[in-house]
Image (cartoon, rainbow, N blue to C red; front, side, top):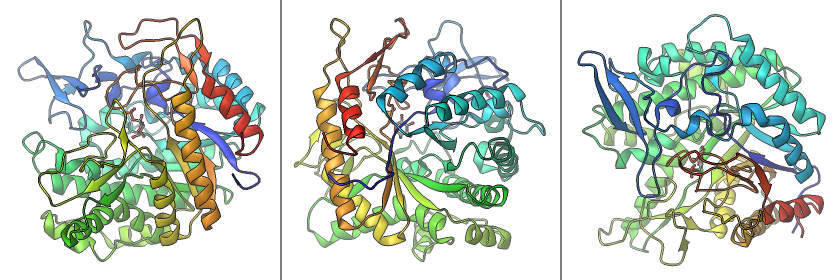
Length: 487
Ligand code: BG6
């Protein structure tokens, strides 16, 4: 396999899924702190209180806490992210293991609520800033380049409850302050940044969301997304202004879709899928303006978007330097009602009869990765980074060993697809497998859905020593890195 010289062989983590220490270091609450554990077939719920009635309620994740209510931590409830894998206290040991693995990049995220606990303060929390200084120092000690996500599925809960989150333009101001703070603080320490994790998540799920739970869903989602685009463009501009060496990328969920049949209606539906859930976001972030088909989408969903002239200018001036994405599963789009449905990892369309599905419902499709890379590179000609990819499945730890040849197989096939895309002429600069250390699943809150090359001794109920054990895949990836892609 051929990979470029100076290729980044990395791994990826996210603050709320690995750090734990949810109430230490002055950190404010975030949504995952009030999200319970779910299961393979049951999504997590959010616990909140209605102050008017003092009633404790539960709502589905991916939905907002109703206006006037507050997220609440219940004493008799288990919240997996509170401890997560305790990276906050164990980062030294973790980074040492990752250094021995041989990676030269680590994607982490900064928890906004560690820096600005409520989100709208004027001065940052020094303890939070210090924590990431220590993490970056440790990474640099081993020659590992940090890749930092500014917002990975979390904003301070206070901003959600007080301002309605991204729906409110005021949050852009708070985000701007947060960005300026971290860009100045970590100048010369962090060079690679991602603005908002899987910014297209909203569009991926909204046809499947309960419209009764979220009134004004479409209008709010598109407006919210617009605010995120504007915020992201500000971040790009500010990052470049503070340090011209900074490189900032967009981050999308790369859920590839194929037409389910050759019925022209399916072909058209599939084209519309790509426009809605992939290109709508990346056209704005890479090209700096809304694409022509945005008009059709806004009409279809009866959306009146508020866009100022200044917003348009900012979007134009704040286009990203590279394109990053996650890649887990593919799906099919169809107008045929009889097709059976898939439900793994945002791939919510029809089930593909040519692919195998994991226990958590994701289609394993390495070939689709080459397809996706060609599509995206062909459209934008920007360098690509894969910042998430992996097999979420259960592992058996027997006599202190984890023989995860299925995971090796998965990554091997994806590396082959990447290598072919590189031969096709695609410029790929990094590969960061997801959950390089086992962590809390974002969708189900489980530990059992493991992605890592490093095992963490913890179960779905929070039992276990939290000890780290290197899986067979760890030693395999070590060899791959040593030989720049070859076994
Ligand atoms: C991506 C997210 O959607 O998928 C991660 O960026 C998440 O935060 C990952 O963990 C895997 O999904 P899950 O639900 O298996 O954790």
